[in-house]
Image (cartoon, rainbow, N blue to C red; front, side):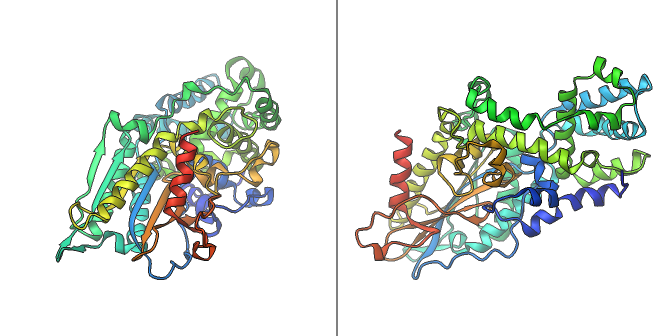
Length: 462
């Protein structure tokens, strides 16, 4: 295996994504081979937009309110026990003299992760902090009118920002980073920061134990085709020198999957820990993730991608919409808060204008929300899961710090318009303009608020 500088190699892994990816583009096998970083699924670092040119705003309109939902930023792996499991499994094999040179190299990394990363399981990293600062910075600069002082009754009034966060620490810190950046750009903004169990009903109502599609034959038949292509044995032979030892002592699938998840999570870790691994492992510096071949990464990701799609996506193989329906409280909150903001805007100064409603939660809440809202990035209907990756990609929907932004526009004597950004890329919606005079209908990605509101309330009432 080719050796390379650990830190340079790890971050070169994601560099191509920032320069080339667009949220709604299809992904071919050739593109996956060129960009194996895509296979890190929901651990992919946030794909910052490069030179985004937004569609011109209709004449006379200006933005006045933003409704947002963002996933927390990059974090340590969610399970400290899995860091420990990896280290203990490799350590036991080393004691039995069953590790190859690459296995000993992996053990050196695993020991540092068990010591330094496991205690921080699930915590937001500084990479995650910077992701939210960057999104907030671009939101402010793209829609300055929303956050400027408003003149009401001859007085200047600073619009109000209301932010909600999941009770998870990584979401609360994400909220703090985002709002801290807004305040650095306009110190007059004094955001209302909110977190508590009572708000979880619309921040993240998803319950993992409520869904079990393992008995849905239409899904399992298709899913099995993908998992049959995931073969841990060649990877295990790189680390262990005795196949009989592996058979008797290691759960191959469990070890392979845990190793892969931890390896792909490392791209979002803090630089000091990466430097510590590179400096103190005292072995040639191969990153965890590059112990896997590109073909192995792709095979496992395709199966993982199909799992996310069927769990909380728009899969036609699942008879019910249970996964998607978990997002209904979030969508209702978005509609209700927007109505409140619009009412405040038209109150002639009797209510403080609301600049933005910000929400900070999780991938398991955001992904079904994109499906429920039928955003173009998440609305594919695919029955052949071997071709799913050509139309639907989890890494484009729920990378770290993934976010939905609904931008509201107003103009004197005209209907309110809304544009939806997903990961800061404009989205199209399957929403029909109900205006009798079609010449007055805006062109996508702008939609009349009345049409959006009616469309989504119909979905909520199903």
